[in-house]
Image (cartoon, rainbow, N blue to C red; front, top):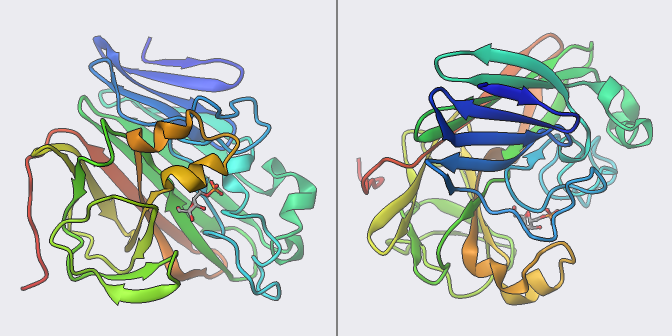
Length: 302
Ligand code: TA6
C-alpha cells in the first residue's frame, strides 16, 4: 500500500518497491526517514524525541516563521522560540495527492498551534495556512512548502528545511559550488566571501550562504562520489551546519555524541532576510534531494 497512516505517522512507499520509502511524523510534519533501495539517507539522533515532547533532532525539521532567534523582541517574531513553531506543532494529514510519484500533504494553521505559542507571533494577529507536500521519487525526495496569508495583515517570515543528511564520516566529505558565495559565519558573527574551492569540515561549522543562484547544485561529495545533490526552487539561502563535538555534547538529544561524524545539515531556505507576504498572497519554495547525480562543478564566472 503506497500510503499508510498511523496515529502519529504517515509512511509512503514507492510503487512496486517497498525498499524505497519516506516516513513523516505528524508532529512538526517532520520527515524522520527517507530510504532509497533500503539505504537511509537522513540522520536522526538516537536521542531524538519522537513523542511530540520537543522538536525532532534530525530528519527534516521545518523552520517557520523565524530562523534562529531574533534578539529584537520588538519584532513580530521576537518572542518566538528558536526556529519558530512549525517544527513543534502537530500538522494535519491532508491525504495523498500523487499516485505515479506518491505524494502526500500536510496542513498547518493557527488552529493547530498551542495558543500560548501562537500569541508570541505578532500577538496572534496573523492568519495563515501552510501546505507541506512530500513527493517520493525512485531516487529523489521533493519537499514543497506553500505559505498563504489568509488574514488581512501583511506578515514577515523566514522559511527553512533543516535537513540532516546521513554521511559515512564528516572528515571525508566535501561540499561544492559555494565558492565565491557571500556567507554569514554564525560562529564568528562575520560576513565574508567563501574562497575555499570546496568546503571541508574539521571543526564546528555554521554558515548561512546568502542568495546562492537557484540553478546552482549544492553537492555532498564523499571520496569522489556524490552522496547527495540539493536543488532549490525559490530558496535563495543555504545554511551548512555541523555541531562538532563540543556543541553535540551540549545537546541532550544529540546521541551518540560522536554522531556528528555521521551527519551534515545542508538547509535551503529564505533566511537572510524576511519574505513579506501581503494579505491574500501566497509564497512557495521547494528542495529536491537527489541521489543520482555525478559531480557538477559550477562557478560564478559567467
Ligand atoms: O541551522 C543551524 C542552526 O541554526 C545552528 O545554529 C544550531 O542552532 C542548529 O540550527 C540547531 O538548532 P536547534 O534549535 O535545533 O538546536
